[in-house]
Length: 344
Image (cartoon, rainbow, N blue to C red; front, side):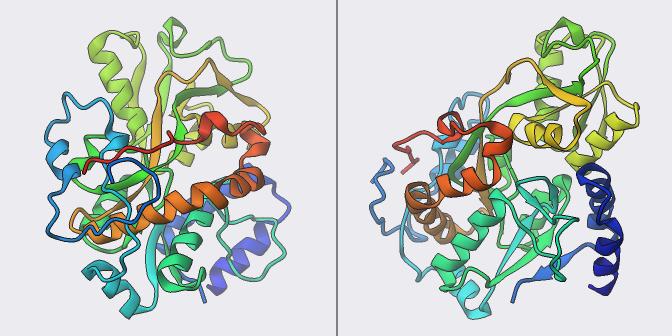
């Protein structure tokens, strides 16, 4: 922690982008662990439990035909008696995989005057709300910073209880992890220098080198675009990086021509760097969810109940605090569907 504090002090005054790029490297250097002292979504409490067949697991095997992965989570429940929740309550802390480099989502402000490395952002607010509902204290959280490419492995190896890290719900990922109901709507978008001739997800990507994060939905979307012909064949999508923010650094260094990522993240990155801009409209519709181990049915149901309540009395305040400056005051297009549908 002393090393982190010294580095943070040295970074103050750099400005957002340069500092963020250096902090991004800390994820790998420190492998950081930060201890911190019915079928429709009407909010009704379900009984859940281990005896209920998992709709998510069943439907995950139908990935090729699934059109609505965001509607495949388990119905909400306020029950705290399940095995996963009991273990978390016995531990007295919930371990959550997060990002520490995504501006306004999960990050540490390099210009903060606080001595401690405080994580903050839209995703971090959700983590605190989950901890408050399950453990009675929003600060009973152990944050583990993990790169984009390690989110699924961390859940499968039970290094974390959940991941709240701008993680898109997809049928491919549902083979490996369980998801909550969606808490945010976004879509893939192009980020490029303002001077670029790129206009969006179209023929202006011809011959351009595009950066994505390994294992990201951006990469799988571009790969599918190559196969279907939606993405011009001469676009180079060979470069992938462990953390999405690394793509912004590559763009700033002139090593790539464009970045593809969720529009919500891209907007935050554009806010950090006045030389880059979003190009064209989002060309997909995607939803962020809280990811958990596939064996943790009780935790999935409990988190869904937290999100049902949070969307009523906390989501908008968090959006206004963190995201209105980059996405605009109108949050309607970022809200997940209501009422929510479930698989059981």
